[in-house]
Image 1 (cartoon, rainbow, N blue to C red):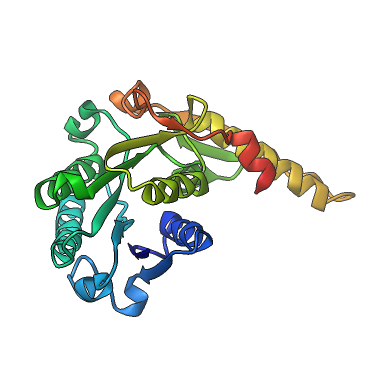
Image 2 (image 1 turned 180 degrees about the vertical axis):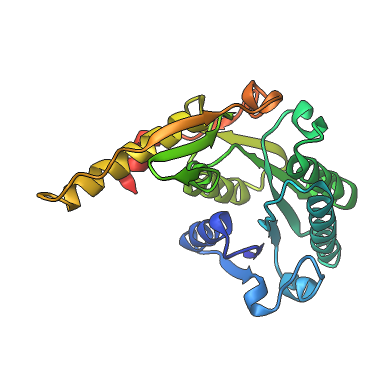
Length: 257
């Protein structure tokens, strides 16, 4: 198959492209570096020409409600319209696993925007051509949401069923091969929280640093400071009901990274 991946250079998109090519698919890696701007609508239709599947992996991390809503509404609409120019082409949207109460919180503009993105695709793409792929948080996200101050690491206390980004990409590639439609939620094998995961990442780094600095002064261990998060994200708001599970735990991921 020929598959167009929008957002092909991101954390998820780059991994998905690799998995699809390993499966012998012809992949058009669409991103701004080659003139494809989904927000502005530039090059989007051209990148979709001749493809059997279009995948939206484009992301914009912002909790500014207006900016996030504006970005995802415009970006997803431009890709959905490109899909309409390719009758019969399947559409796959990378989304996030979260419960309705998360999107209702006025503090979480990003999740409101992702909910809007799903509505755009559901409205513009026929159900028999659409796969909504909803992933839980990735292990890789923990470090990006950690604020370091000397030996202290401040981490939001979000309750998650995280998985590796590469595992999520592999599972999407499998779903594309199987021509799955509807909504698919994927998650890791364990329910935990960001501070616990951050602690394991910090411990692994500390061990690696100690190995490198044999004979020198040992680096100070990082102390994880959990930051309480009000609302559903600290409870079950990000835990899907019946997800398809990856077998790779945080310990497995750390050993392989």
